[in-house]
Length: 313
Image (cartoon, rainbow, N blue to C red; front, side, top):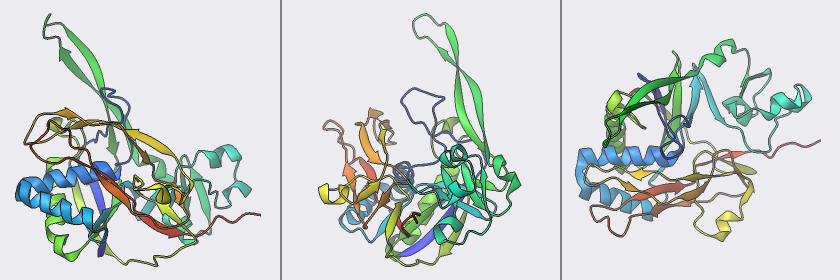
């Protein structure tokens, strides 16, 4: 498979909801299952239901045809990864414990063992001086009006979004077999104009693309860092977790071919979890019994990169 690093340079705010009907509780990253659903919807718009079904059937049966990570922050030439759970990278020897505890993301140099001048800026650990790092994004709220259908009375609520500043945005890994390379990249290009996340009718979620071909490094490691949400396919895969956190995902099925339908609540292993062996995860078929327009899937395949064990004194 080829590996790409895809940078999303947002032209408008983005709204990635976390809870149903809670408009000010939003995710600052894009989980891989959200990315997958968005890409598949774009794929369907380009190639139709039948071709999209064939694509999903093939990648479900073969783990080596398609895989994506979640989308994380970048700033200029710095790419950030979720901090491996339980890892301090020796920062606790130089910085206050409370500062180290707040770190959620680390720059790529920490994972490669190339850190010489570690800095902590808010929730980010970065190699070298990066004084503008605090200007990656800002939260914003925009007022919306809802009209009661019975009384015609109006009320105001606020929709939260994330606005990225210049030279910043989100990035993700895409591993794709050459057979699907062209249609998948075409679907992502269409997605850039369709928008990702909520509030797309208001122009949210639009972005420009930068696609970079990257070398696939070594696949073996002492431990493995999870860069996607992950749904274990069996107890054996579950036993490979060393440190982990879980999160719940629900939401609705938004289809251009059918009605809006609520999805089941699922628990995923979250990004930043650490495993001692490689696992595959699974793509779940969550099609409701009464929904016969097309199949509905939730992406729970593991995207892993090798990391060293955390050094202990």
